[in-house]
Image (cartoon, rainbow, N blue to C red; front, side):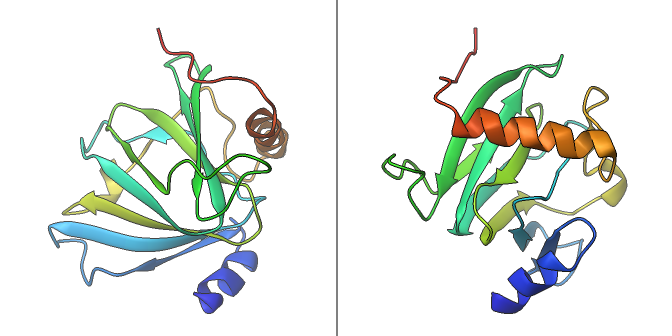
Amino acid sequence: MGNLLRDSKSTCKLRQHLNVHKSYHEPCQRLFNAICMDSYIRPHRHLLDRKTECLIAVRGMMALIVFDDKGEVIETIRFGTEKFYNETLGCCGVELSPETWHTVISINSESILFEVKSGPFEPALAKELAAWAPEEKSQESMMYLSKLHELVASDTCYPKRN
């Protein structure tokens, strides 16, 4: 895992994955994903491929941020292998339905996820990117990521689901 963390720090997206499955055709897709704190994963959903996604923390602390169709935050879930400030550790993983708009941010510098999803993997259908969110590598994306970090660090209560 040390190599994966080191490699994530040197990529332009500040994250690096390592597939456990041997082929995109396998019925179960499994991978590790090292995510740096400054890595912005554009909010997305998996509606085009309609597969549930399971994210399990292997190391570090992360936050799942869930949005409505207009881009308003409706839920934040902190998960990981450590405490978040004075909070007791709540959970070590999350499961997402395909229609859920979401992103994941790393709360500390060395976070690793284990992701599991049904296969086969179809790269063209993997993610439907949110039109209301900034593109990755844009100047706006860093400001947006900063606001997400502030939201997760604040005492604001979520969920806000109706």
